[in-house]
Amino acid sequence: MKRILFTLVVCIGTLLSLPSAALVDDFSFLQEIPAFVQFVQAVRDEGDVQKGEELRIKLLQSLVEEQQRSVLSIRTATLLGRLYTEIEPKNLIRSKELLKEAEQDLPALQKNSYFALILEAEIDSIYYLINPKSLGKGISSNAKIKEAYKLYPQQVYAQLMKASSLLYAPSIAGGDVNKALQIYLMLLNEAKPVLSRWDTASLYSSIGVVSMKRKEWATAKGYLEAAKSLYHFDPTLDTYLKEVQAHL
Image (cartoon, rainbow, N blue to C red; front, side, top):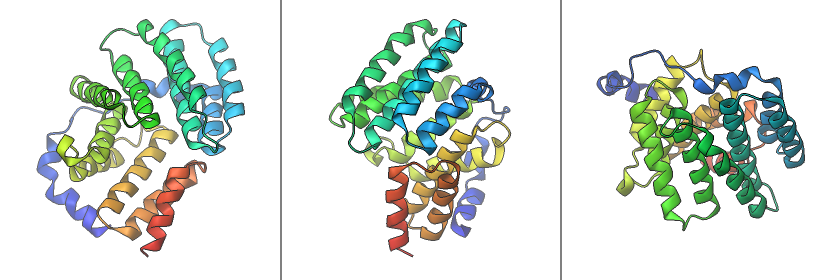
């Protein structure tokens, strides 16, 4: 933890170049929809695809405003689509079906709008997760994240996705763990009032992964366990925790 705090101090100059305007979250309306919160609970805490499917159907029947319905449809499709890649046995066919449904909703969003860029990036990222050989999808996702970060730097989720692209991309493709950490720490310090429960969990787990890459095992354990306390079902997180424990 001391090393992370030291990094924060020495990188103040860089942090000052990050957005100085107040951070916002245009996805925050989702937190006000109890059925969506329940859906996220089913998917990320229980890992229950059947319950997730049922709640998604009810959700899509409940909203009539076109943009909100499109955002909700795509967001639930990507969350559920990712879950189908994590459960055992995996169901990649259903995951791809959900992604195709999500793609059909994209035209309802204004081209190059914040929602369009972020949600299409999410769709492409899951296609790449399903098939890492589909480099075009990985490149497309990163390009849209980069554009969203450039056009909408005050948006929390644009910052979060930019940091994740820096964290997971190889250095030859622009990956930079320390730059990712700078963004994560900025969000941790400045975005708490607007962070959703699910984005907070993602933030904690990401800092945990950064700490693993830096071989700061005790710090990694703390952040990964904090993420796990918010949503229990996460096979990838479980794998990380086992690796961390082996180094303590």
